[in-house]
Length: 189
Image 1 (cartoon, rainbow, N blue to C red):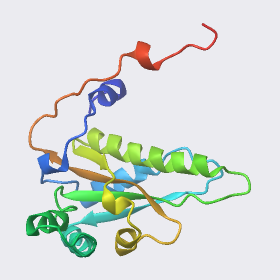
Image 2 (cartoon, one colour):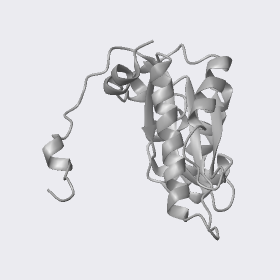
Image 3 (spheres, helix red, strand yellow):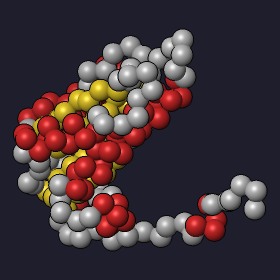
Image 4 (cartoon, rainbow, N blue to C red):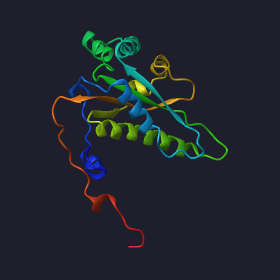
């Protein structure tokens, strides 16, 4: 296992279409979810939860998404509908991080949203630490109320991200990163 700094500096996103099996084992999924849940959580509210899409459940969810997509996009081609049907089956495992942020007397909703984002990033980093490729995605179905309900979200819940996890078909390439001098200021300097 790489040391923490090497691990963090080598993480890359891999497109789900560029992932294949194997995906994480059941025990590894539990490890991923345990790590994802170890994030700052002011007030111990647990303002997030996880939905795991694996095996045939990925196809079942995709069928639901394709039906919604086809109904809302009557001009869609058969290929476009078929693409939506396989949307959650591109990687061996997809985990949705669901934000349950809500008004609270002491804890700002913004902090709860950030906690869900931290859980999502921990999930991505944990997948990399276990040797898997990952990608944090939100697409149309993350913002469509009917799609969210079909995927099991309740009132007031939102998608922080769908994390696709699998084995990379090839080593990921890095992308240009911002130069520190363009994103860092030093207070008082």
